Image (cartoon, rainbow, N blue to C red; front, side):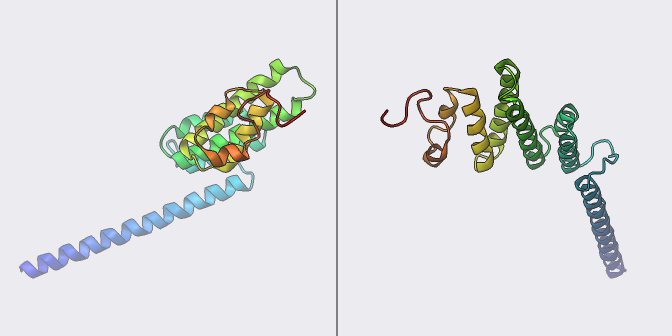
Amino acid sequence: MMRTGIAAAFVLAAAVSLALGIFAVWQGKVLNTQLAAFAAGHDIKRAQGADPALHAARGVLLLSQGRVDDAQAELDMIGQRDPVARETLLYALANAHLRRALEVFDSAPMRRVAPLIGLARSEYRQVLLLDPENWDARYNFDIASALAHDPEAASFLKGDDMARQHALVPDAPGAPNGLP
């Protein structure tokens, strides 16, 4: 009798484990399908409290359509739940702000360009806090800092010799490099 109970419990546990495994595979397929839809340029509905990766993918799609404010809302929905999804969308937002600043840099007054550069730099900093080894974000941060002529930009990279060697912004901004 005791053996039958143990065997029944074992079979029940195996059935529950199998059901959970099947559910996890199904959820993964649904997530991959939704991510593929965003990658293909389709804006689809998501459930409330959706996976942060879906918010990041939708945010990137919205940025490709020029909808920066809506992409920012997607970032807010990610919050601190998933650092990888947050980093992905922050980097895309920073790139969008820097791209827009570069588009208007020659034709617009600095008072229109400076806020875009400031947003880009702030978002690159957040990306670097999440992933200090993100060299693309460091490089783009240097470009944004060079556009802003920021004397504090080099101090962000202090203590990191490799970053300072590759930095576009010298340690002493405004100082001439080399002999005249």
